[in-house]
Image (tube, rainbow over all chains, first blue to last red; front, side, top):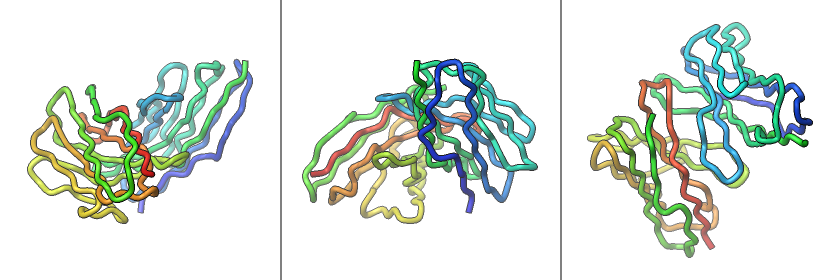
Length: 111
Length: 114
């Protein structure tokens, strides 16, 4: 079945460092891809999405590009802030619209 | 977008009892989903709840344990039956508003079973 694999955390960075969180997927069709973020004590929020190959999703300085050839959707940000500390989930949506999540990556940004 | 509320936000329950979680959406939506997030874990889909049809359960989840109602296009309930400590999790409902390209989540219900 479809699945999502993302890098293990926690990831600890200093403020203004470059962030990459790797995400790869396995799917039989052409899924939509998402990054969700869960800030401490808060609910799950959609961070960005891409619905077809080569699409780039972006929001709040975060970017991810849908790479069909490498089945990847890596999350990047050029300069992280302390407020970016959260758990990040990569997910795909299959033909039935249900979401399949990766295991989540905790990001801790130190001042 | 969609604004989703859940009740209760948290509860502490005794083993063997049942809890019904409510999910209310501010607009009419066809597709609703219920997820479980066990402590420190990712989200796992429990079932898809579409109005006018029986809920569709994922592998490992059964209707007797997690009965779901979907009486209209803005409301759904999930019941966690005959609870055990292993049911301690955050339960979240979500809705799809754009044909698989966007899904919004409720704030979750944090359940602790003693």
